[in-house]
Image 1 (cartoon, one colour):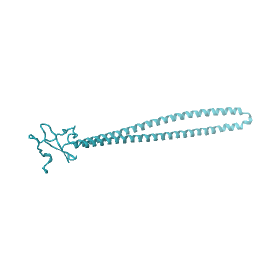
Image 2 (spheres, rainbow, N blue to C red; image 1 turned 90 degrees about the vertical axis):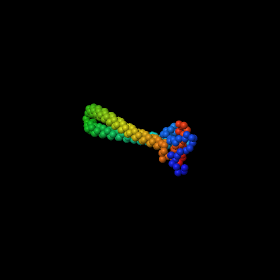
Image 3 (cartoon, rainbow, N blue to C red; image 1 turned 60 degrees about the horizontal axis):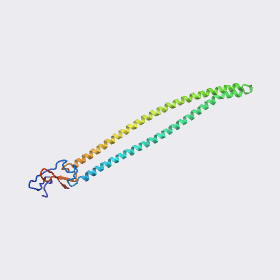
Image 4 (cartoon, helix red, strand yellow; image 1 turned 180 degrees about the vertical axis):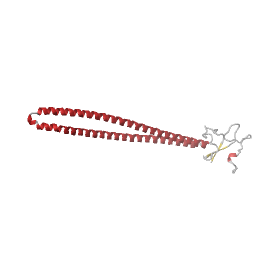
Length: 228
């Protein structure tokens, strides 16, 4: 009997012995081989544990990548804000410097006239003229400052709109990445399920356990397991 085909061997039992073959999903213990020597149970448990570890590792990688991107975005935003504040400060200083130079240039004729008429008793008239010129210059400065404030407000609004647009693009990219990872996860779980189904399929040639037919008593079928 050593050269006989294991899959068609007839093992004598009782007088009414029959040759039976295992039916798919008819093993004891829910199809995991619990009643057949437990040969497949450790392999299936190892597979499930490996799939769970891979999923946990991938989820952790996704979280780490998300945290890294968030930190990079925060650092980038802080840097841009600092550069913007420094730029606005420089622009204000340059604007005030130009205003002061302009006022000084416009006051030169007044000061010259004051120095020329100091000896002729017209100092009061010159002072009035000087005060009037300074008042007009201050009004002009206030008008320019208001215009500058409106311009800065408009620029701030444009920057806010641009930042919102960038945030929406980043969010869309993150959603796309999450969809890709979800699909990869589903494919990995499906592949693992297919591998498990193939491993439990009767007569498979890839596993280390082969199921062969064995005699049965009455209508009860109990397959015999042969370890290769």
